[in-house]
Length: 408
Ligand SMILES: Cc1ncc(COP(=O)(O)O)c(C=O)c1O
Image 1 (spheres, rainbow, N blue to C red):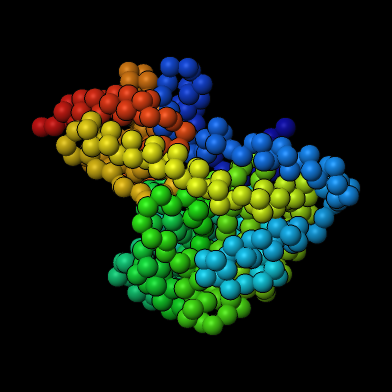
Image 2 (image 1 turned 180 degrees about the horizontal axis):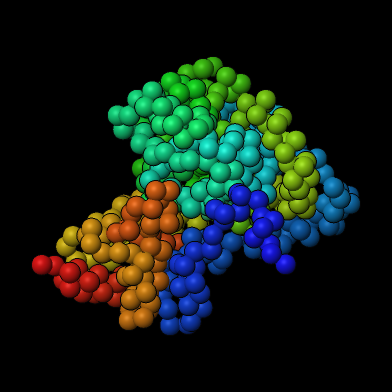
């Protein structure tokens, strides 16, 4: 059977990465891994989740919990999200909220909603790899989004037309981004809104890490800033994607989209055609846990992750050789390291796994244009104190060796 002959062209961009092969080695017990991008399971609200399942199955709601349910999502959960969005300055009502199976599904739907083949999506250089994966299926071109850059709308438009399509949206991971840990400041958010108005495109605001702020003042979501400008969410071009994965549990697969009603109406049709609805019981459990002590739980995980971030930043300060630079995130799970130009992150990973037994993610895969070979992503949410010190010390050693080797 020659499957290649039957495959749709969109599959040509769905590739397994070589890095994944290398990272399979992570199962070995002596490896210190800063490669993951996931929450620490020890910090899941396991007891609360267990109690919520028990309460639901002991209630009159047990039938509904196991039944099909509306595509829009479980009403009490949409109500809770609405109230939470309002606390962040997003005046919306439940018809502006669609529950999705994680925010990853939201990104897939938004690619499906907006992209024709050869259209252009503006993304950061680097950007969230999963967003590129989701959008790739719709065969776009990518252009580089610099909220403070000086490229004109005309230039972006012309470049997109040269590729046979139009610019459709700008995608950005706004707070403590994956992979860089960097947050768009207020001015950058305003600039992005101005640019999107000039280009007449949508903004996809990926707020997956918004709740994980450890210090500094919260910055209003781009959607809130746009509502401030335009008076109502119905006049807004920003589509906000949220997630319970980093706060409560990624395994339950519950996220949401908040946007103007005409966008939500279309997405509900897409959800019906795709998986009908996000699992009813999981939505109920998330609603129950969110209503009972969400803020207290967030305070606990913020404290734990903030300590790990501080530990990693101090270790980097103590052990990294000259010529290595890194971000200082105010939240999230990642620190982004830039190495001297001649060092290749992927080659360094192979060496590091072999001789230092430390894993990280080489940065190049996060760049839609294939640049960024001299960057790497470090995760601090999964590893505790002393291990962080040990791992960074070992990394500092091999980074130093590599740096010296190539110097003239
Ligand atoms: C920036 C960003 N957006 C979206 C997601 C998808 O998360 P989920 O589908 O679990 O909500 C992730 C997961 O790592 C992420 O880092």
